[in-house]
Structure formats: structure tokens, C-alpha cells
Image (cartoon, rainbow, N blue to C red):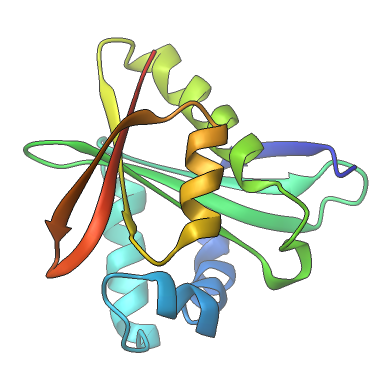
Amino acid sequence: MTKLTYRKAISADVTLLYDWVNDPIVRKSSFQQSLVHFEEHVKWFNKKLSSLHCYIYIFLDANNNQPVGQVRIDKDDNEVIIGVSVSQNFRGLSLSSTMLNMACDAYFKENERETIVAYIKEENVPSYKSFIKAGFNNVSKVLYHNETSFRLTKKA
């Protein structure tokens, strides 16, 4: 089993996250499916890194420090929204739920009164199962970005 560590994203992660965001499986699961252009990504990434309301956790294989995936927790005006992606090399190892739990625990240490919300496309069954395994509940079906989706929540 892969043992994980994590750290907050740093500016040097811009290309790593760019590669992950444009992975075909990530794009298919995303609510915005078109490819992301590098210049657009750099602007977005720098804005997120400097935001006090965005937490991007980079997960690493503890044995060799190889990047495994990322979890982003982003607070907007109404909700705290979470998303996860796993590197192609580590898919199928059931790491998403561990990553989600670790990221939520870290977030709740600083924001214990918040509720974290996940939106998952209805057809994205593996992601749905990962969030359930990570303790997300209160499942409802909603229309999110014009897609029938599951809305799940988790509290500290």
C-alpha cells in the first residue's frame, strides 16, 4: 500500500498541476471540460496560491516523494468546495479517500466550524464512492453547472 504525505502547493507546482488538469480523465470528470491553456492556468494558479480562502494540498508517495495527486479546498462567497485528482500513475489504488480525509483534517484544524461541500457528476461513480468512503454524506442530487450531480457534505 502507498503511504502518503502532503504539503501545501508552492509556485513550483504550477506545471505539475497544469499537466494534471489537462489529463483526459480529469477533463472528462470536470464541470469545465475544455483544455486549459497554460497562460490561463498560471494566472488562475497564482491567484489561488495568494488567496487566504484556497488550500491546495499536494500528496506525495512517502517512499519516493513522487507526486500522487492533489486536493483543493476553495471557499467562495457561499460554500467551501472540495475537489480531488489523482495522477494517472496512481489511479486504481484507492488513494482518493485517504487524500480527501487528510486534506479535510488539515482544513478543519484551521476552520473547524466550516462544512465542506463536494459536487460530483452523476456518472462519476468512482469519485462518488471515494467521497462516501471519506465520510462525506447528506447526499442530494442537484443541477450544478448544468450537470446532474451529487452534492455531498462533510463537517469537522
